[in-house]
Length: 134
Length: 134
Image (cartoon, rainbow over all chains, first blue to last red; front, side, top):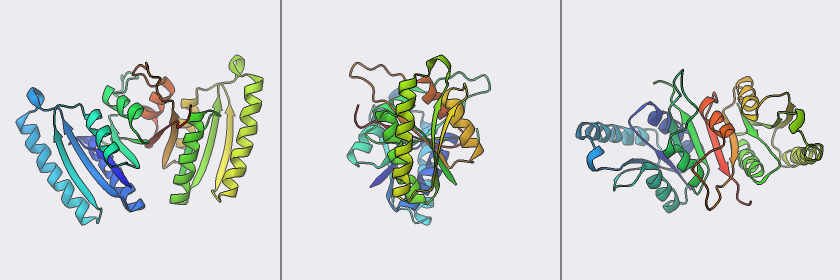
């Protein structure tokens, strides 16, 4: 049994990770932290360095909290939804945790296409967590 | 701490309920089973009778499984998303469980508007479960 969490170094990614770590502790299951990037031209070097530094810190925090875990950074030309679903299948995940942005005050009723794909196509339930900060 | 589950007497509602009951047992929290209907002209008498019979059975099964619970049937002119969010706020729910239909083979990438509203506007995380049967 494994929990897979989609992580981005933003408020919604941190909220998802926090909740996923709580769930992993509660169930005593392994946590797979997945940071996925399409790569190519979209990959900003500075953002990538920040992302790596944050992932290293995430790994240390999970270790300190006694959560069995694995941090994977995938840059293989796939959309985050595809990577997340592939890893969830590979791990026979118990569920996936994703972060959602709170919509803006004028916000329209639209969920991002990655979030929709994960919700609809994941082989397991999906826990959607909203960012507390923004 | 409470878990609130949106229930409809369909495959996706049953899948959501099954998972919600497991989560309530794991956490030893109360489960609120909510069946919401706008009412009015949409309310089909036969469907309503089926729904009530199924809710009674649901209550018995939860009692037999030792899950502290409450079954509420709301018919007050609100959309299911509004009722579910209102009850989650009232109960300071730990999370909401909803069922999603698997998309059809030709299925377009569209989540129902009720599901989107719950995911975006709920005061707590939302666990989305897909129907196993259909």
